[in-house]
Image (cartoon, rainbow, N blue to C red):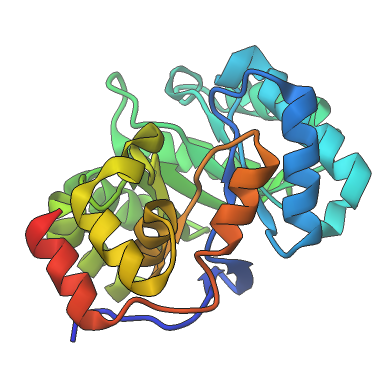
Length: 271
């Protein structure tokens, strides 16, 4: 039996229940093509979309705004991220957030993340400055991205009024050792959701020999196995990116079942 095994297709961000697989928006080439894929995803249960101000100079946020207009604000748990160079000044943070909200076409987001830790001001200072967005109701939750264990622990200790509820990091079946050994146990202990970005390693998991072997056993694809592996861990959600409808359908096929712990252990040893 693997440690931290989880059979639920849902995870929690604060008190909000989200599907364990959401969608990312980094690197979309055709927003019109992606529109069909994303609206299909939301109408089939995907309720989290992740974006950031730096993605395509704000165009990704505008794209998410189009999705929200189509499916309704209450259908999407919206996550966006702020650039770390904003974090030295609260007014600068507020202006950046207000611009992001205009691009998204909403009055608040559900989750705002520090995209990566600033190198120029202390983590306690940047986190306390960032809390202004929750104070003002511009976001319901705050979190971080690309924080290692020491940085995450310091961020958690530095908040004055609002909890850090998410750490978004690079995590996949082939980029997992540090996350599973160091970050994940801490996140579970402190009720922080660990969101896995680049969970498919830009599609390369599809040709991974270990995943191909396991996939044949379950009559699934390697992509589905790679996603199921991640969400089989407590406090882990995945946010793969796609702009293809058929890929969204493949992602949804990673839900509703679980890898046997024996096969998860095999992936841990071999992938």
